[in-house]
Length: 78
Image 1 (spheres, rainbow, N blue to C red):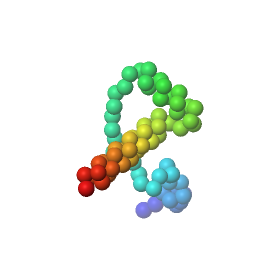
Image 2 (cartoon, helix red, strand yellow):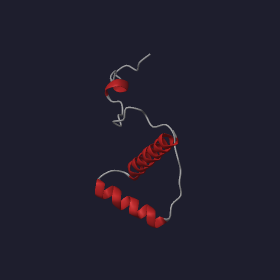
Image 3 (cartoon, rainbow, N blue to C red):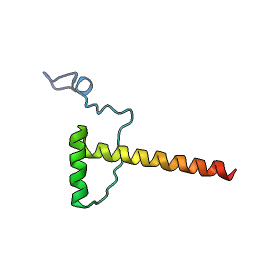
Image 4 (cartoon, helix red, strand yellow):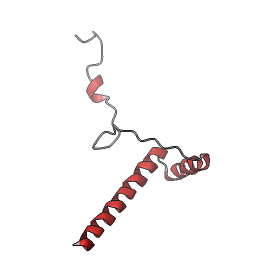
């Protein structure tokens, strides 16, 4: 039963939205040199985003490049 005087829209109207179509649920951890971490922070500030956003973008680009190379190798093999 709802609490008397509570906000009935709390769970729907004020839900957090990160702007992504799919929620992020998995974690990947990497240890880097302090200089690399500082460079990532500076780059994130200049691009007005976060360090995890930079790393996600870099991983997506790497995977897309690797997939393109794999498909080109498959095409050559045929």
